[in-house]
Image 1 (cartoon, rainbow, N blue to C red):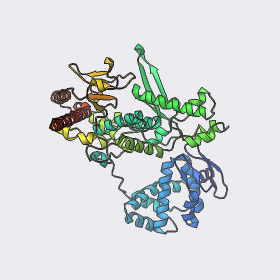
Image 2: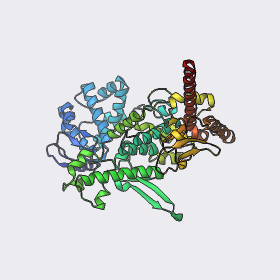
Image 3: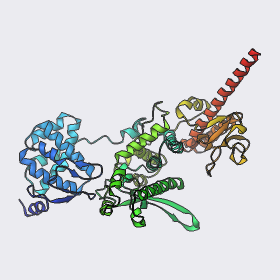
Image 4: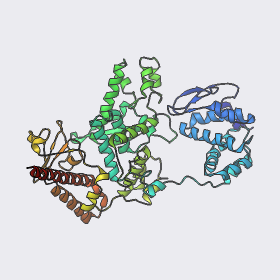
Length: 523
């Protein structure tokens, strides 16, 4: 063994001498423990792995796994663990050797991916100077060209269940989340998660690592207030909250996140937590409720706040998105089935829209929090297009799927909630078309935004057909002037909502006329 290898091995734990270790993001464990907690989302069952390992490799493997646990993300260690388990189970080999790897590679696509993962692992094992990995094996593995995962196929083919959302689907999700919150279907935490991931496309682990201090605002020249988030970076080999990207957001999203922030502060104080601004600022924006509850008042609270221990598990993001989908009863206009909602689709959508809008590769990489432009070509080399030409016939055809109208139909202004209040009247430049039932301030552009709002009460006797024709004409003009279907599609969801109101009014009037006919027969 060389002097360099001896030095490296001296830095690592000796199999017979347990030592204290620390994962990349700060979780402490002993090398002799059966289970090593590496993050809030993953604990490595090292005892199970060692149990499958041949006797001649047990001590070395434990030491090398410590090396990886201290320097790499929990997700990467998890993939190594899975690959090692599969290697020992599939090959039944008592060592790492060329024959076993040849058989594993040829066994299946999964086997080939396991080889790809283990190649990097064993290369590092060999560099550290431990016995068990022969040089000829490393040479053979390095000579192989292993096919990587097919990147971007879901994006390129605009997969309707796994790929990016269409503009209509994304708008439906955002509107549905807000409506579900206003009707009590979801709480402020679910709403904050839904809108945050929809607007940023960040990975769940990044959002769950956020703290209350990451929401801030700044007053620029002219007293204009700008709103920002500090979003922790991930997948760059960094520790817990070691680096951030600043992300500018809208006032509306900032208001939702501020409400979530106040909710966490109130909950923490109700549990008996100390009211110290410095401590409150370090609380998780999305806390692991049980974990934080158990630490309130504990002398170790401050230490725990330096790790991800008190933060929500990343898997809960998926659960929150599922609750939003169920509460909103969202359907896809492309599949005519329930909308498939998971975090990666929002990420695909951010990249796809950026490419469609002509952003360069470096800007798209920044939007997706990539360190380089290596994978951005997925979006830029084949710019997909969801948007189609929409006419009146198509608008009516898509009504059942789009489900854009969220309000109610009332017979007249006098039958509406707040119908007595002239300030509640929703009108175009020429005529009234409904009543707003909301008592608070609303800065939305009427009547365009009103047709997709749950507070809108459309009048039965209003000329909604004129609103629909006006929107369709405006859309056609934009296409003619700019040739840009993406810009023209901005109000498509409103078009579907108005079309639905027109159809509902027609059905209601037919029903009323039928009742009149029946009444005259009785006379």
